[in-house]
Image (tube, rainbow, N blue to C red; front, side, top):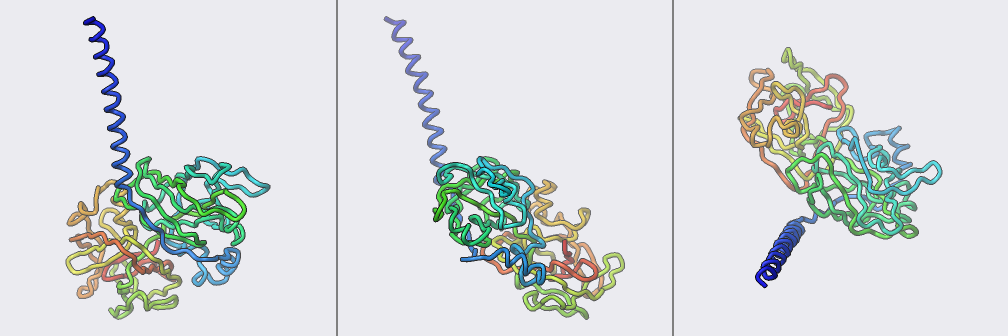
Length: 364
């Protein structure tokens, strides 16, 4: 009898421990879901004729950029999808269409229903900051209507759940920020809900990208004779000042191309006498590192955070009084969240650098 009771006790204890582990996992799962934020994309257009946009781009690139800003925009270099619709004639629906710089092609999931649970993986060059996504099959307005579009997606970073993303039922480019300061090698976008297509259940995404380096609308650009002007007042053809970094000789330069974008995350970077608000991946001349961005320094793990860079990183500035370039330590970095109109100079006729709020920057 004692042996039977002992055996029963062991069985109960064993099952108790199993139940405890299961409950613990369930509670962890519920806690994760409870903390998961919902992000709402902004932007997009009711209707876009991409054939027309591509044609106009050849004639007037400034007025009709073929995607959304182009020059300092980066696309993923790799992608993977959980399923893919079979090719039809010369048309394919591979995940590589997500980063081929052509919204008229698309990744289309390959399940027979609405593709709930299907996903694609990409590496985002600028991480989760200012991601642009082109929802639906944007080959034409008819193709966009006929195929289903993603309404809600679950976003992961290296298999870690980060947020839910709610997309607008629009063509064109929508933008959003992924709410995480961590950097991930792979971002996964999993379909949770859809906008049903008129004819087909197939869910399509045409493009995904990071919208690039820009500075806030309150930024002053150095003209000739030490005068400045707000960047919003400049346009292609304007004469601004560049500088020969080796000789400190100022030179006239002409703007060939500019771009205006909307961003949701900026850095406020300060030195002793200068302050600027720009995207984390806008380039500075940084002592011992050359032309690079604070974001790239952080991503390379030279510094683990922006805070670590304070008083450790020196950036090149233009000293008006002495008329020289000099490296000055960064005294503060602050992350700004919101909706910001931003500008970037994408092309200059002569040398590449220019001076904004006293900082020496450059086109890529």
